[in-house]
Length: 205
Length: 397
Figure 1 (cartoon, rainbow over the protein chains, first blue to last red):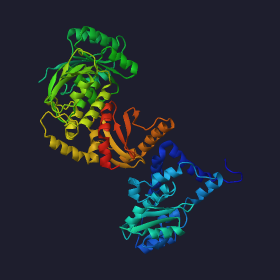
Figure 2 (cartoon, one colour):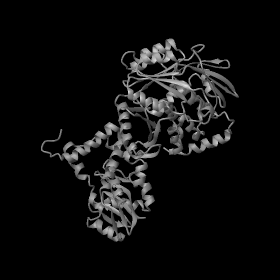
Figure 3 (tube, each protein chain N blue to C red):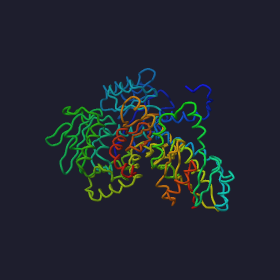
Figure 4 (cartoon, rainbow over the protein chains, first blue to last red):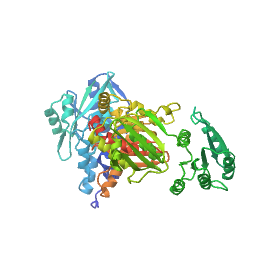
């Protein structure tokens, strides 16, 4: 039962509970696929955009006009295509849920482990593989990568790679293989996560 | 040219008579089609001149199809009967088969399928020998089971020979050398090259086997897998012209399939090389399923619903199949967990137009097989069992 006096944000709470229901009814793998496809469907609705150069792309991130910022707010470019996101877009939902119910729904840890398993979707969108710290990463990370697929810089495709993520409790998750593939030092990702909740890399193909 | 057969179509619906007559007036059947609008009229037609096959509706005013079938059985025992109904029920089916009906088909039916059933029925009394390219002995046994055949299948190979007896589609007895019963059956299934002859018999000399066909074939496949055996291929020349068994002929393209019966003295090394090649190719392995008559789609799907590979003989969105199937698969598995039923082996959802089968392959993926109505489910299960390990290896899952 919710604590008295606490206000339940039902739009958020129902989403968190829906994830739990998905896990119960279909198992963690099917739930993971469902959330990823949900994210990809959202990305489908984002417009395509071309920036003349990388600086213009970064500037658009900084002033929140980049399609990526539409879903997560402003990020900071820490150099060499590495970006740090100060706030997790799901933090308010988590905060509200835990404020009212005390703990997150059951099955989240198992789901997160499933999300981090390599598979066709994680390979295609360069996500997970250790960079997931909660089920929400299964929405956020593919959404950002799929939006990246809609962005070009000077007519060339952009490739977004998830490098790491940090839970509300401060636990960091690293996608070691993807970090290596992106050519970024793990120490850099670690340092970015000291001050940010999410770390990703953007490369121009 | 084979002797022209005489087929009597009995239905009290004029439109249906017209449709069936047109459908059966096909060169592959080489038959004269005569018609009757009632059971009574059918009797008059047969009294005037016997027919080889009666294709009758079950529900007619006056004499019903079942009554007609009994009369035909009593008075013209050599005449085959196919009973049709638009009101399918297990009871009807049981009654038809119990009264000695040769076949039972449900309306609406596929014209090509009906033509094949009729072809099988009017040719049921012919023994045949020869070779069928790319068809395993297991396929032929399955065909005998599915067609409710009462027959003896003689198999002759270099290593030995044997006979498998079928009574109304059940494998009831087998003999091979000094062996009889199940052991004889498994020995015959392990033969790797030779000839077959299917002969109509009234009954088996004895009943020594009491297991479903599917269970026998699975055990035979297991023994072959463990013991090793080259495949073999039959080549049945007589069936080439009109492609009456499209599923069997299509198997030609996949003759590297382990377990094919090869009567042409094929090079075992080449066969093994082809098999090895197929083992490495996931799409070829999935293609093994679409060679089964009626199977139109085979997908390997990750448990998260993302497609690993697929093959389809019709235009379907396999990505979407994978996504939706993962929910169905996950739900089936969750139910098993909730009920304490252990690991899921297979599940099938049956729709009006045919089944969809899910089967886990390894820990990370599952197969989705989409088939038409009346597809050979036993063969699908057999192939899943047979190819599961190779699929796991090819997909690296």
